[in-house]
Image 1: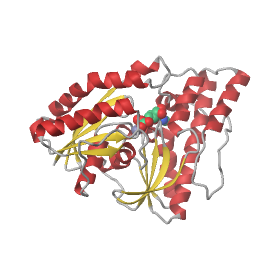
Image 2: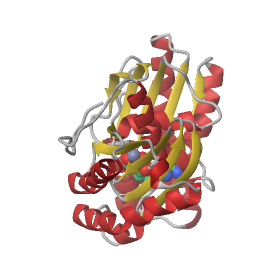
Image 3: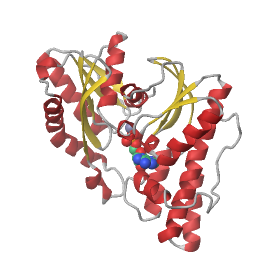
Length: 332
Ligand code: KG4
Ligand code: ZN
């Protein structure tokens, strides 16, 4: 079955075509970062307006690249939460309209479930049961995935999401929004042991995170010595990045051991991070936990992950109807 996946929950307008939940035919992502960058973060009204402009051309391009037509689409999957309500509504109304006009079913997908399902497009992906850590701009949440469609929240961040910490630290350092990639690049030239930043909630049985104290530590460091440049900036980025990766991976691997779950998945935009990827692989190997992380392109927001999650939900019997509305705070 050919599935069209549509994603407009934040600042990417994305559409993808996926065959039978596995074969990625086309994946088009139109990013709005240049629009939001001058404001230092996503401006919801600007995001909604830009989705309105981009959504149909993005869907057209995905169809064109996959050499398929709308008439061949058998299912439409669309993010209906969580996210910015005005942004979500753009994708959702387009999905409903296409579903009505073409008389094909549509399914509303939870964005976090989308991130967890993205790995199914990679050559190697975990079959349930596994632990799934979603680390993005809005979330740092650990789920036990008992089977597809059955998720149990184990723990989450008490304050900032990991991606949010990256974005806020980037702002403190005068780096562009979103901050993950620029910090990652500078960190690769720096010494991760240069500054010992704190790891919050170090207790071994606590599977929750906190990143606001780390952000404040960076701020205090900058207040004391000014915004660094050159090698000192690289060292600061590497030390911050080490603290985030350490905190995420140590709790994830400990949780897997504690719950006797052999496979873990890391997904969401922050899973594109080079140090998180290498540290998780190394610690997983040391403690006999198999670590899966999708390729970076599938970690950040895209339509393909929504198509896969929607297809799997549809196979389980999930259907949406025209009464479905956007749920900005939909919990998985
Ligand atoms: O999943 P995503 O694309 O959107 C949300 O659902 O939030 O995640 C975006 C977040 C941003 O905070 C961005 O700074 C972060 O992912 N990010 C990274 C990297 N690439 C993106 N964080 C760390 N290292 C990266 N390489
Ligand atoms: Zn996301």
